Amino acid sequence: MAIRTRFLQIGIALVNIAIIALVFTSIWPFPSGEFKVDLPNANDVTWSYADGNVHVIAPYTIHNGWIYDVDDLVIDYTVTNMSGTPLVHNSIQVGTVPAGHVTVSQLDFTFNITRLYNEGQLGMVFKDDSLHFDVSVSCFYTMKLIKFEASYEADVPWDALIRAYGVSPPRVSGSSIAIDYYIETSHILAPLGSVPVTLSAYDSNGQPLFNPPIVQTLQLGVNSTGTLTFLPTVPSTIPSFVEVHFQVLGYEFVTRWP
Amino acid sequence: MAKQRSRISDSVWTFFTETIRFIVVPLVLIDLVRSSWPQLSTAFLGNIMAYTLLFGGLIVAASTLEVMNKQGTFKRMFFGLTGLCFLCLWLFVVFGGGIASFTYYPYFIKFDMSKIVYIMLIGLSLRGLLVVRTYTDNRHLIVEQKLEEPTPEKRRPAARRTASPAFGAMSRVAYQVTGDDDVGSSTPTRPPIDAPESQGTCPVCGSSVSPENRSCPQCGAWL
Image (cartoon, rainbow over the protein chains, first blue to last red):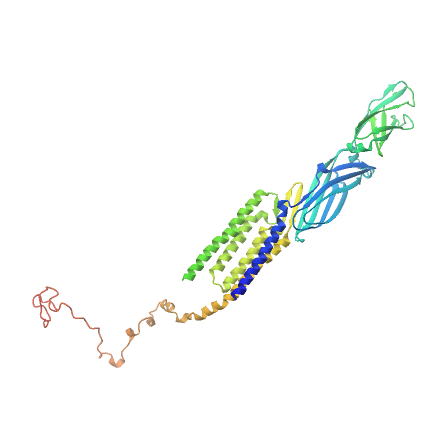
């Protein structure tokens, strides 16, 4: 009878030792850094612009240096602008990260800023904004006994595509009138190089000062200046009111003098 | 008596060690964890000190009462199993139900290891088998001991405690009563009086007296 009790004691002790080992090996990788998720921060985010679409790349790394596989790894991310407009919501099914492996990948998404512009949300085109990244990671660990969830919020500054623009007072140059203008555009437009800008001017009555509109070349990504020179429809008359219309990259905007 | 003392000392020792294990050390560790990671949050962390004291105290009490009773008694098994239940509750509370979150803006991390905690509780519950086993193994000893003990009616100390005179506790010889016919005619037996060793000398004045005399010729003292 005592032997059976002894066996029972030994059995319970073995089970408890196994449980302690399981608990330790399950918890240890988190404080020790054997399991680590490096989510993207603001400095890692790269932007590009093409055809009205903003392309965003944000790298992340998952270290699984311990003895258990990471299962059902899912990365969810949502990006909103300062006004709360959702720009993108996506989910990446990474799946299983085997034990001892390091997974390097990236959040890669685009959003159409022209669509926002056409919907009346002009903020991101003409004003600096802040893109709010909400990234969350969920996975199972230790044979799905532990569920791990991590979320990360980051605000990435967004430079307005067209940061500033304006016109100077009209100058009479002989029989023609010259109007200097400037446009400062975001650096993410720099890869686009030179693009045409269409200019048209109107007087206070809404009558065009010249026809047809003048097309000039504008260097993007820098502070570009130019001069709009035209012969007025009414000779030797300096208009007291000028309204210059710009068309760049499909965006239309107006500036007035005075 | 020696066994009784041994059980008391075991109880005191159990009280001491269980207090260290389930109250003092956990409170120190919890305080250390809270001060090191103030961003950590669990379900019971707000009142974790009170819960640890409560359930730790219950564990200490149950364990002490368990050790105070003999192996094989129902009380020992009862307090053993009760202590085990409190231990499970204590573990569940200390581990916050297995769900912990860590907020360190802009990071938010949440662990759900409740399944691990349930496995730990199952492992702890196995100790209950040992408690029951100890009870069943030693039950017959308690039964045999009870059978060997005298019945309460035959115990003398119970008779002595009565307020009225207890003749049964006295010697029978002292209560031998003569028959009714002998009353008034029988000579009571008295123990023989030893003859004084100073028969030839008066014990009062010290003069020598012949053995036939009943009184001292010198001082008249009765011999």
